[in-house]
Image 1 (cartoon, protein in one colour):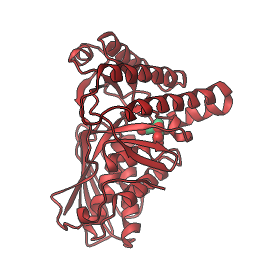
Image 2 (cartoon, helix red, strand yellow):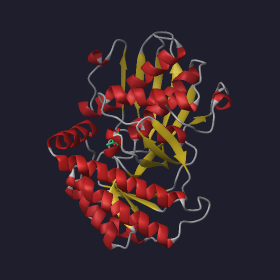
Image 3 (cartoon, helix red, strand yellow):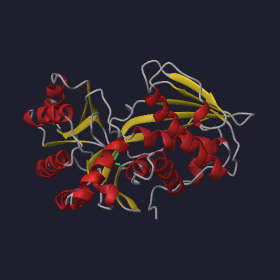
Length: 354
Ligand code: MEV
C-alpha cells in the first residue's frame, strides 16, 4: 500500500488568461488531497472517495467508464472524481510500462471539489505519485508534473493549462506561462479563503471565455490585460524579501492588482453573485484586495488580510459557507508512510517543465 498527498492552490493572479499563454501565479496552500493505492491481482480499478461528497462512494470497474455500477450520489460528481482518477491511473500505467495494472484506490480530500482550489490537480498529482511508487517506478517531480498535466488535459478535453498541476506538484508560489513553469520566491501572504459551498464547471467556464475572446477584440484585450496585471504583480513579488513578513506597501499593491484582476474576470463572465458578494464583504472589511480563484462560476474567493477582520466579515456573510486562513504550502507532493522509500531519493526540489 502506498500513500501520497498533494496540496490545493489559490490563484494570486492569472486564471483563465493562462489558458491563452499569458502568465499566471498560483500559490499552493496547506489543504491536501491524499490518495492511497494498493496493487491488485487483476486489472480492475476500485475507487473509494471519502470526502468528495457528503456520504462518499465506492465504484469498481474493469473496462472503462461506461460500465460503472450505479451509485447513490450525483452522476456528475462520480464522473468528475472518477474521470480524474482514471486519467491518473492511465498515466501511471504508461509511466511504469504496466498497461493492465489494477488498483484499489482511496481518495480523501480536504479540498472542496470544483471550488477553485485545485482539487482535481491535487488528486491527479497524488494519484500518479502513489500509483507509480506502488509499481516500483517512482517519477521525479518534473515528469510527475508533466504527466499530471496530460491527465488534466485529457479530462478537460484540451482546455487546461499547466498551472494547477505544476503548482500542486512543486508547492510554493509558481509562475506558469505556456510550457515555461518555475517556482518563484514569495513571502507567506496572509490569504483568507471564502467558500460559497458551490462549484463551477471548469470546462464550460473556459469555453465561455474562449467564445467571448473569439467574438470580441475587447475580450481578447481583457485576457491580455490580465497578463499585464500578472507581470506587474510578479515584479512586486520579486522585489520583496521572501523570508520576511510582507510589508503594508507590498500588500496594498498586490491587493489593488487582485481587485483589478477580479474586475476583468467578472467582465469575462466567470464570476457569480455569491463570489461578488464575498469579494465585496472582504473589501468592506478592510482586505487589501479580493478576487475569485480558479475557474469561477461559484466556489471560492481569496482575499489578502493579515488581521482577523475579513474572516469575521465573511463568517457573517450569508453567501459564505466556510472561511479559513490558507498558509502557503512550500512542500508540494509528498509521500505519506511510503513503503518503497525510493520516491524521495529520485526527486529534485523543483524546476522547469518544457
Ligand atoms: C482552473 O483552476 C484554472 C483555469 O485557468 C483553467 C486552467 O488553467 O487550466 C480556469
